[in-house]
Length: 438
Ligand SMILES: NC(=O)c1ccc[n+]([C@@H]2O[C@H](COP(=O)([O-])OP(=O)(O)OC[C@H]3O[C@@H](n4cnc5c(N)ncnc54)[C@H](OP(=O)(O)O)[C@@H]3O)[C@@H](O)[C@H]2O)c1
Image 1: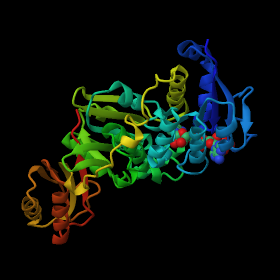
Image 2 (image 1 turned 135 degrees about the vertical axis):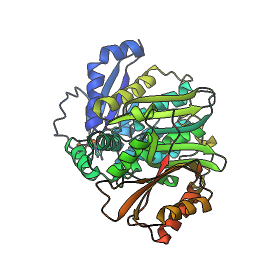
Image 3 (image 1 turned 180 degrees about the horizontal axis):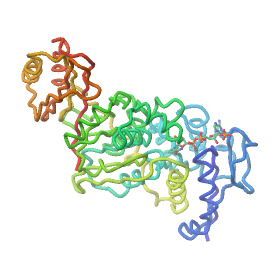
């Protein structure tokens, strides 16, 4: 049997401790599958005294993850510290430069420094595996990088943040407010004490930037993502979406268009009958649309110790099975130096259907004025409905809901600005994009 694969784990928190547990509990299966043992020979975390609920056996403790990356007797450095700078970045860089394979679950790091790290990995002839960085336990990286050779991706989109999907699911199912659902998510450990990163779309954007690079062979461009979170989604939106045959999801979408590549994260209406609309709670999903395959949807657990450990262990096993010259190819599908600069499509040129909810003064002529602003901007309407007062619509106010046929973001913004200037609105207008989904 080949020599054992020696693994060093930096970070023994939720994911790191789970990885150590899976490697121990599944040691026999892994040895059979990989043709060699996988042993943890080194570990690092901040607090050497913390009980992590797992016996790390003879693994050598390192206070300094960077040192561990450089000098420990390891073949694979597993980074589960988190963060886009500091010890995570420095230790991954050090491990690659020392010629060690790296496995990481760190989307923040990859979305910022992924291409530079890939260049080092490719120069050194080592693997940089990151399955757990996007959609946790769902094997989307492997699918896109390996199983879809020859396919040209036209669009990739997904539910990439479990916290947001949990909140939107409960708002719809139980009629609760955003704030009430967020509080519950925090109580259950699905949302951080400071949830901004999740609910305003940053976490989704990090993951989307990695998928975009894999899908379109471009350099990762996380700063060029249009981003809107879910904090201004109300019960009025959820109910109106339901009445119209839609469900609201926070989607990350990357799409090739004539003017470049769109990368956008925003609340999105998808048809209630579509497969992605059936993805509830903390579950994640990624849809990949290609010229050969058509649309593929992968869904499953996007976070949590075990689900994430499943992806990390899969990455470690791939390294155990790899032989020089028989690896899975470049980190982002193409050699890092061949990744093209990302050509951004302007959000104003985004084409699609729109849902517009307006709260207006209850007076004569408002309806006609709204319709005129739409017509002036060449926006064709699928429907325009004036609603009877809902619970949130006080006396003297009416709700007008418009659904457009395909138009552009620029036209919708001009029309809504015009309506706002006309002075008919009592509240801020709500605009939600509609996404085609099978
Ligand atoms: N949690 C999930 O569901 C999930 C899902 C997908 C991806 N991820 C990614 O996985 C990574 C780890 O997440 P997590 O949830 O496991 O985080 P976590 O529970 O906060 O664990 C972080 C670990 O890193 C250690 N650490 C912090 N600074 C360090 C340093 N300078 N040197 C060495 N170790 C250090 C901590 O040590 P102490 O324990 O001693 O404080 C802790 O063990 C992140 O990149 C995250 O984005 C997580």
